[in-house]
Image (cartoon, rainbow, N blue to C red; front, side, top):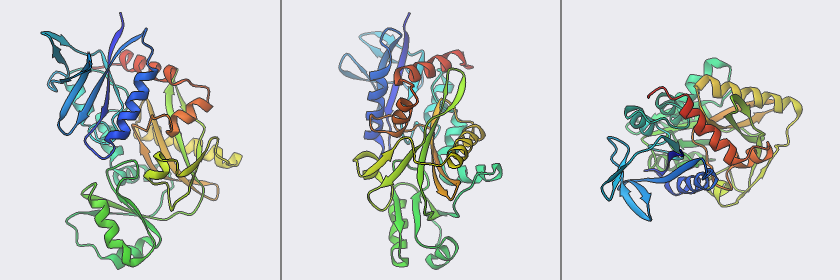
Length: 328
């Protein structure tokens, strides 16, 4: 019998539309002879299953829905939600409460990795190199001159809990710092300020595949603009070179660092980490626990280069979460 799978996508943040594209790719590549997959769309107005071209409300207490008097439930969930509630632990907590297995990391790990500052602090004792950084809260009285004195210019001002480069500003001048902080605060009530690292940027995915942790081929990022922002990621305003043009030493170092980040944080299924090289040393920027899966996203590019078909990867992830389910 086919396993009933909910592919959950959308979300309640600025990444909603990107997540819809990722979810559509998952649905496209799930083998129909193995899975009976249903799109579940999450938005600020509610959660809805797409059933027979209709949007049917999901009962979040049971993660099921009713159609023409018949109840429909799921054997597992493929989490394709970027941002809340898929990357911050909310969806995972709900599914754990109703004993439904899901792809990706646990609620605890999702809460940690969604917080850029907490992730950096967690990884610091593990020998991971990173930029100088400072956290601000919305209610803080910040002193721009002191911040710049500590971090330096140029620097990056980022929403602490957001993705797809929403709420990210590269600051070159003291006069622009306050406006950058206010831009970041539109996405989150915490702001991460990081020193600028001038070097080769590379993004690298790690997946659990065929019972092994597999580090995929890194991609070199060359932004046509000032940095790898939303337009660079999703609108073609960048060069993405897979495999990255790295020396053997650099490649070995980023492979080791990516796997160390994945295992130290307790990531599961798949993730993507971003680094900037200072000489031969990769400096960690952040980890995405639900990375983009659109046709133009980095992880699909890297999987193709590594000879892993998305249908095989997604099937393996679902089989693993069903097999290793500890809730039922």
